[in-house]
Image (cartoon, rainbow, N blue to C red; front, side, top):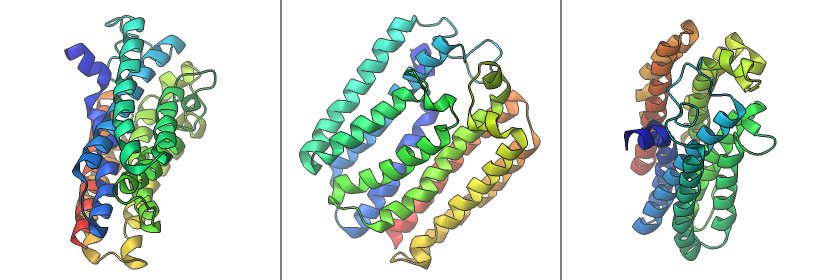
Amino acid sequence: MRIWLTAARPRTLPAAVAPVLVGTSLAIHVGHLHPLAFVAALLGAMLIQIGTNLSNDYSDARRGADAEDRLGPVRVTAGGLVPPRQVLVATYTTFGLAVLCGVYLIAVAGWLLLAVGAASILAGVLYTGGPRPYGYEGLGELFVFLFFGVVAVTGSYYVQRRSLPWEAFVLAIPVGVMIAAILVVNNIRDIDSDRRANKRTLAVRLGRERTRSMFVAMLAVAFASGLICWLAGPLSPWLLLTVLAVPLAVRVARTVWTHSDGPTLNAALAQTGILALLYCLALSAGVLAS
């Protein structure tokens, strides 16, 4: 069980939960909550995240990206803890369960959710799988922004209200940027091993110093863009609740800016995940209070 929990990477699940909370909070602000649709969206997002983690574990091992010199936590396929075929079966099973959640959402919100779900699963598989994995071409952060931000927030709103207001897209910006920042820290940590494995992430392409600057800029953009729906829209100053996460953001930014060793960056990676969750919880609370 511990090995499979390691493979599922439960610490990444807040990145799947947070955008669903933000999209649903906006839907509640407009009308009533549909609890089953919320639960199905939440479970579906978590299952797609776990399936993506399993798929990446399998694909990175096949491509040699998870070598013995990597600084992050052990990967079960590359580490020989689970046979590759079992990891692949677990991947298919997890995505299959996500599809069951999607079937319910299609029934209550329409066939548009079929395209959204299929695209999300495909993006998860092709991150490190397929003939041209986009995670190896420096496009990981862009796809994280699109699927954890735009798709997840607007999709969570859509299953509640069956509409797509501009506020949902605006709130998706800080969410997507904040969650993409988690991947940036991961890639800064792995920049040397990724370079040796010919995994040309954005960090490998830009170099460590410029990627650090990008990370700090992304945090600033997230906090600033989260206030747009107050400054230019219908929501209230309660959105300023997100400022409560600024001290943690400053601490994480300072750590990423000044350290290059694996253990410290592993801690910074976990803190960035906590930051993203706290920020999204504060943003959701601000929306609900508006």
